[in-house]
Amino acid sequence: MINMYEVSETNKMIESENLDVRTITLGISLLDCIDSDLKELNRKIYEKITTTAKDLVSVGQDIEKEFGIPIVNKRISITPIALVGGAACKTPEDFVEIAKTLDRAAEVVGVNFIGGYSALVSKAMTKSDENLIRSIPQALAVTERICSSVNVGSTKTGINMDAVRLCGEIVKATAEATKDRDSLGCAKLVIFCNAPDDNPFMAGAFLGVTEADAVINVGVSGPGVVKKALEKVRGKGFEELCETIKKTAFKVTRVGQLVAGEASQRLGVPFGIVDLSLAPTPDVGDSVAEILEEIGLERVGAPGTTAALALLNDQVKKGGVMASSYVGGLSGAFIPVSEDQGMIDAVHAGSLTLEKLEAMTCVCSVGLDMIAIPGKTSASTISGIIADEMAIGMVNQKTTAVRLIPVIGKDVGETAQFGGLLGYAPIMPVNEFGCETFISRKGRIPAPIHSFKN
Image 1: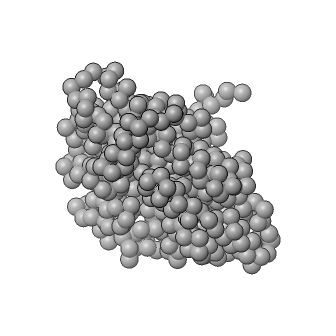
Image 2: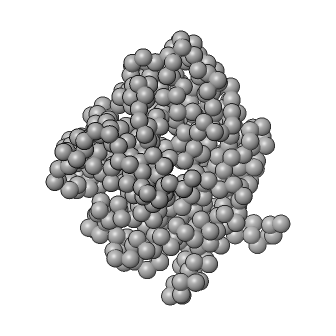
C-alpha cells in the first residue's frame, strides 16, 4: 500500500523535480494489413491505426487529470514497414506513399510521433528492405510525425557492413532533404545494433513481430528527481550513493507502472513493459549530465565520467526491476546531446567530445544520440562512426544506436535548432581522417565468438 508520505513525496517530484511519464506508446501490429495492392494496403493501414488508437490521446489525458501525473507524449509504434510493404512496394517511392498514410493516421488520432518506418537488416537486406531504406530521406522530408530506424547489427549475426555503408549515405541524403530545417530529418532517424522489440521511446520505436496485435508500453523519466535525491548525500560513500539512486528509481518506476496499468485497462490493450530510462529534456533541472556532476564530476566528460555513468545506469536498473515485473525497452540513462542542457554546456566548455561520448556509450542505455556534426562530413565518415558504435553493441551484447545530424551549411562553432523536446545542439568536431577504404569493403563483420551459446 502507498502511504500519505509517499503520495506527498510523489507530488513534490511532479511539481518541482520534473517527474513525468515521458510517453505512453501504443504498439500496433500491421501484419494483418499486408496486401499486394498498394492502394488497398494503405487503406488497411490507415483504418487499423485510426481504429485501434482512436482513444489513446483522450485516455492519456484522463489519466493525467485523475492522478495528477504529467504524460508528456502519446505515441504509436508499428510493425517494421519493410515487412508490411514488401508485397506491394516495388520502388522507394511506393514506400513514401505508406509514410504519407502513416503521417495522416498519426495526425487524425492526435499523436506526436509514429515509429516503425523501419527495416531489420542485421545479416542481409531483401529488396524490400533496401527500397525502404532508400526511401527514408524523402519520407522524412514530406512528413511531420514519422520516425525511422534501421537495425544493422546484432550480437548473434554480426554487423551488416553493406547496410552500414548505405545508412551513412542515407543519413547524409536525409540531411540534404531537410536542410531548410537544420537537417531536422536526421533527428528522426536511428541506426541500431541489437534493437529491442518493445522500446516506447522515439525515434527508435517499432513493434517486434513477436509482440501481440496491440500492446501498451510506457516510458518514464526522472533525471531531476534523481539529481535532487543525490543532493542529500553529498560527501557520502558509494554505498549510500547507490542506495539513493536505487530507491529513487524504484519510486519513479512505480509511477510508470501505475500509468501503464491504467492505460492498459481503459484501452482494453495488454500491458507490455515499463522502460525506466532517465530521459532528459532541454529544461533546466532535467539533465543526466547534472546527475553525473552531482556524483562528483566538475563537468561531464571529465575523467571518471564513464565510471559514474556505469554506476548510475546499473543502479537505475536495479531499482526499477523491483518496481515492475515487466521492465524492458532500453531502460537506463540516455545521453542525447541536444536534449540535455548539461551536455550542451559541457560541449561548449570543451570537456565533452565525440570520442568521450563514444566511450560513455559502452555503459549507458543507447549510444551516440542527437549529436550535430558539420554538414560537410562525408557519408563514409558517418558510416565509420556508425560501424564503431555497432561494434560496441555487438561485442558487449547490448543495444547501441546512432542518431547523427550532419547539419548542412553549418560547421563547428555554430548551433542547430530543432525545437521542442529535440532542443538545440552545438556542432561538434569530427575526426577528419578518412575510412572510405574500410567502409567500401562488402559483406559483414562476423559475430563475436562469445555469441555462440547454443
